[in-house]
Image (tube, rainbow, N blue to C red):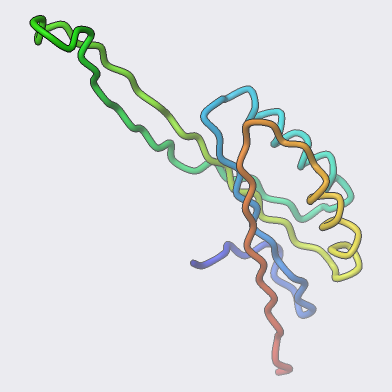
Length: 120
């Protein structure tokens, strides 16, 4: 997967992609604010809202005679991707704090990418 460029420069720093996903909008926004506040020392942060995933299913209200009586439900999974660029000393400070966060109702996953630039 290709990560977007954040302020290309001669000295490259590692880029981390955090992916937050939840079924609850309020929990996702609270987690997004918490992660953004913990990374507020960075100027290179980019937040991208990903498409929602919809899952719908139908259940019979009565298991016997009333076949036409049904109920439909829909479950929506919302996702947000955060790209953070920082120096190695920042990651030593930030990763333990990220592991200690209590994000209730939100799944957190991350990808780490480090690119070295060859001299001209």
